Length: 116
Image (cartoon, rainbow, N blue to C red; front, side, top):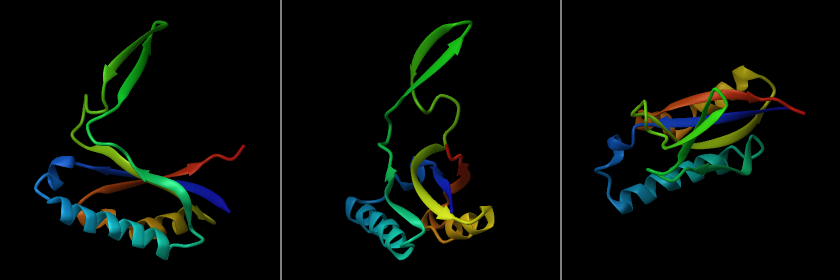
């Protein structure tokens, strides 16, 4: 069975008006979804990433530079990820379609994880 990473992208401004209690309900929807995908979503292989944090390293002509990120060029950010197991891309996409993230106007990038 192949592994696929579901990369969750969103615009944090779209949920800026959400109260802490509402946010907790949203988070619980993601957790319930992951539990319902038992055997497909790999437990402990998915997390929300911290908002407004990160660093970006780039290299040009052998010189490495560091900048705050990851917001330098886009308003959409990677907000989290899940790792799933599926026999092929079609099944991985079918799993991604059921993720609550799409209900909140987010996008999900599905990527095959190369095995060693």
